[in-house]
Length: 106
Image 1: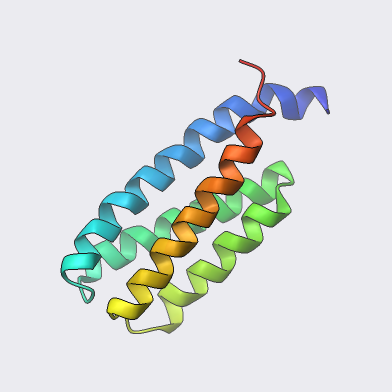
Image 2: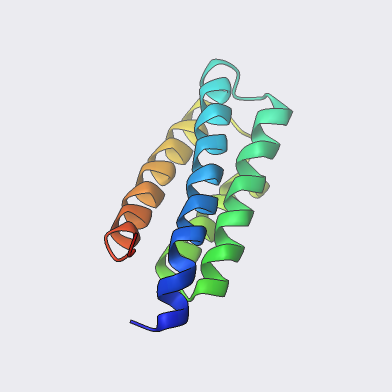
């Protein structure tokens, strides 16, 4: 593993996990009110941050998954079905991040 990647990975994971946490909180709001614009914005911003950070780290699968989910937030009027899809995307992102975490040297 690239030594620079290895040094940056723990910081990257901390940042991404923070974005996932923000996304979790916003998804809970959206599950009660799918049209809440503030919560939708938080989800979109979290996905955008994850995508950008993943691209800079060369984590292409994570970046692509975040990009696709971000498109849902941008293109769709959020409704309960879209919120369920976003929750599934959030779970998939968590699994990808978990796979990266196994590579981190703490």
